[in-house]
Amino acid sequence: MRILKAIAIAFVGLSTVLLAISSLLPGSVMNSRSVMVAAPPDTILAELRDLPSWPTWNLLLQDASQVHTTKSGAKGATLRWHDARGGDNAIRLTEDGPDGIVTELRLNAGAPMESGFSLDRRFPDSVQVHWYVIEELAWYPWEKFYGMMSGGMKEEAMRQSLIRLRDRLHRRRRG
Image 1 (spheres, rainbow, N blue to C red):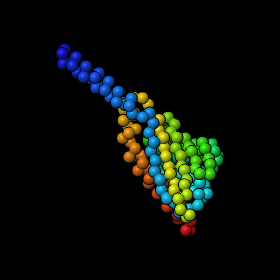
Image 2: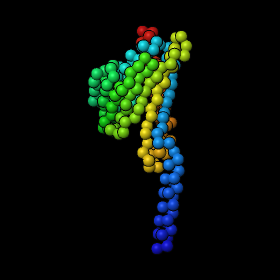
Image 3: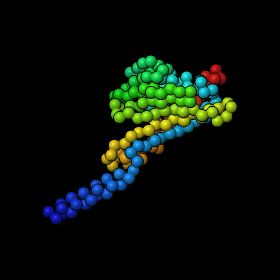
Image 4: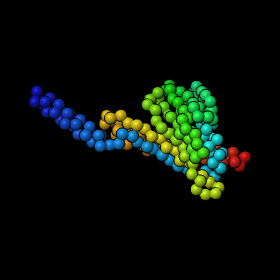
């Protein structure tokens, strides 16, 4: 009985420490990546607004099936798809401006995340395309620790997607 009591006390103590540490961690996490694209901002924005073209460059949609879009190219446009595991996913264009777009991203029917692309002309012939995703985290410790640890995986997929977008725009410009 003493052993069980010691185990219970240790478990409660460890849980309290983890909860205390996680309360010090931020409630949201932002992942971002950028790439330079040799194309005019209008061309890049047209590609970003064209949600039906996203499966050709965005790795979030690489195993997409049952892809449906509504109101493509305008505020409120939505792209819905199922992934290989059958998860329901959606991207909805919420803001559209001359320097970028903002979307609401839902993966596996989860909580919405803010995502966006901003454009910044760095040189006369190139534009920096910056993609960010802001994910709100729940209060429980494993969610916050997940948010800290998963950034590398997300950022690599974002980087590869941006490279694919850049290559697509460069091919279109040459061809």
